[in-house]
Amino acid sequence: MKNSKKALFSLLCVAFCVVIFACASSGGGGASAPVSSEPVSGVFKFEANDDSNDKGTSKIVMTVADEVIDGVTYKTYKFKGEVTNKIQYGVVDATLTPDDDTLALLKTCKAISFKMVTTDGRPYNVEAPISSVTDWGFHRYPVKTEPNVVQEVKIEMRMFMQPSWAQAVRFSQTRLTKFRIQTFNAAEGGVGPFEFKVWDFKIYP
Image 1 (tube, rainbow, N blue to C red):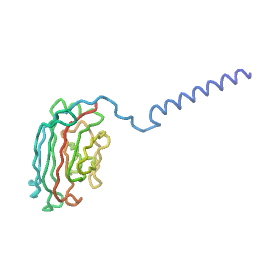
Image 2: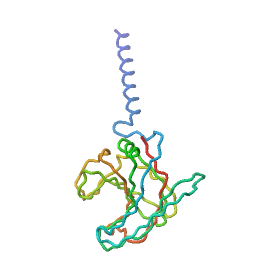
Image 3: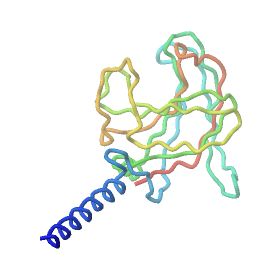
Image 4: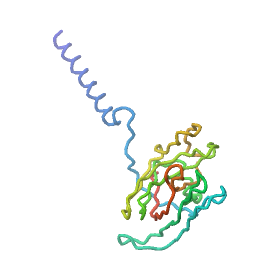
């Protein structure tokens, strides 16, 4: 009888340890695993858009160049201009439209990343418009910057969130068609000159 109790006790201990190990391996129930897949380069068409369609007077100019950064040649995209207070919600943006192969990756990827440097130290929004949002309350991710400090911006797709005023819509990658790197609007304190440069866009499958 004693041997049977010892055997049962041993089996329960083993089972308990297996459960503990499994929970630890999965992040403890709900925590997402870190993005570890090798990234691939994305191909995008870059455009600069002002707020003239909304009768604003904000300006933005794009400059494209091939630059050697840390020994590697990249195509860089610099955006420079000024946000005015002509309209309260006026913004300017850099729009990134992916080619077909890149878009296919974006619809299932875990994350995106890119390098960014500003001269103004302003915050920016990375916006991910989807067709099911109809009130301009697109999902976004805020990026804080420091003047003249190069940073790698890495965004997991689950981190795109709508602003509080938007009608809630679940984020669906399959509806994604582009990204925007956007200034803050006048109501958010975005008025004034700005300058930022981006390069090295990658996608984590």
